[in-house]
Length: 178
Image 1 (cartoon, rainbow, N blue to C red):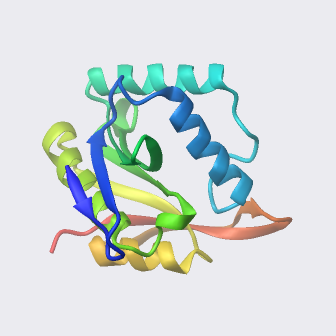
Image 2 (image 1 turned 90 degrees about the horizontal axis):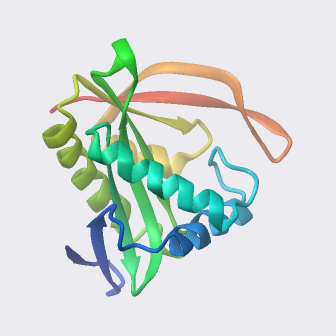
């Protein structure tokens, strides 16, 4: 699906698929790590790790345990969103992850993709609950998540996430149907 951002750039949003080169995902995640934003990863990846990640992700999709979307600007991966089914007795719950390249934030891409991901997750994974985790200091992300319906705080973990030598609170937000 092609979308035009608020600044006129045209982006292609596609489901995770084998045709997206692992090398492009690698460049994407390593740029985020270098930026030192609020993500779990703090060490750069190498291509063999990214190839394994991609293979595992595609297998999870095949087993109906995950759905994912990537945004491409040309061949460059500029966003990656996924919804993952929890294991075992928690399998009716789906956790979302959102990552968008710095130069593509604030132009409407996150909202478009998150709404698409939620719709895809509901269709393919049929969850009872959809939730995500965000760092309490990440105000732009929280504003985006609230805008699409993640408005109920179901967990607050004090000083849970280490970022730049400080410990920050982590929030778990539940998607509330309107």
